[in-house]
Length: 104
Image (cartoon, rainbow, N blue to C red; front, side, top):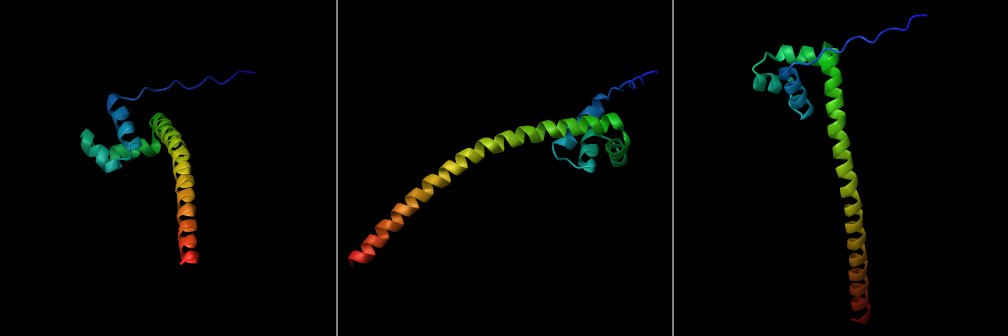
């Protein structure tokens, strides 16, 4: 039984790589096309039908979102600590206010 050979991977052009970067950074097809001097339909066709382009775009988006998720996790820990500290201070302020109200 023969094993199927993987199809050769076509390399993306510099312009396609630039389009991948722009799209992954959040630019629309139209914005990326204008910045690269292309027609919007060209970028849209790459994004929808060009397998290597789509693969590169998904990989770049995953890298960006993975980094963003790591940053969010780090911020989340600090945010929870800040909320815990604030709740302790708020609880102390409420106790002081209740004490003053009872003693008045």
